[in-house]
Amino acid sequence: MDAMKLFALSGKVAVVTGGAGLYGKQIISALSSAGATVYMASRNREKNAEVAKEFSSHRGSVIPEEVDLLSEKSILSLCDRVYEKEGRVDILVNNAVLRCTSGYTDSSEAFEKSMSANATGLFIISRAFGDRMAKENRGSIINIGSYMGILGPDYSLYEGTGMNANGAPGDYFFHKGGMTNYTKFLAGHYGEYNIRCNCLELGGLYNGQPEEFVRRYSQKTMLGRMANETDLMGAIIYLASDASAYVTGAIIPIDGGYSAK
Image 1 (spheres, rainbow, N blue to C red):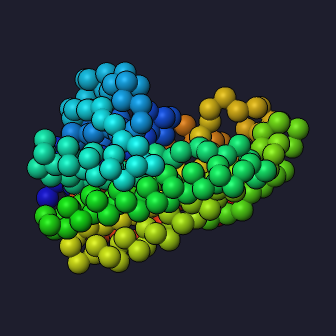
Image 2: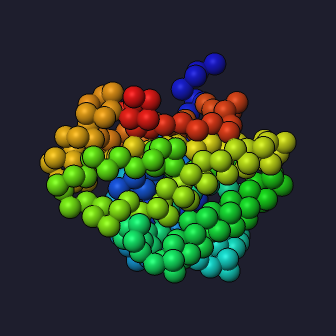
């Protein structure tokens, strides 16, 4: 058997939330270049349409869609639309995150809004697509987490940079931590239907941060650098494809060794 064929995604349909961001673009690029039809969904369909054009030369197609994780109606409507068009969904990537707070000092209302999108929204969309996948006895759900979901904040990274001046955003640590264990719940709940669920705990992606922060953060990793524009792609293809057919409930750091040091 040609082992490389296990990584092929031709004929598969993927739904990715929040695909227009820096990590999102890697996810879209990985899935579409491996041959999947990818629906990228967020609140800004126009921006999604612009980003989708970047992948016109890939083997798979990229289709802009719209979803508001604050609205159950919007989530269920997205699920219905994709199934009406494709008749199947093989891959769901929960990548979107709604940044609602500016720091630990922000209001409880901002925290509550964050939970509505990033916790309740995650629950609704995973159940909506997961239950449909269960009818077909196949599927892969990939949750995009963060090292902040398994570790506390390191304020020494930010000293003198102006970053997190109001304290780290506690809601982000809260819902990414919840996503980590919810991944294991989904793996157990849907396992009998041949649906796998795994979580990638991402490290810091270089995005023009202050030089001193980049230096300090890089020293905290084992590879001596922040993540780049391709570091996520291989893991996405692996978890989306048959290459990981016996992998579920896994919490996989993609952080250059940051969480292991």
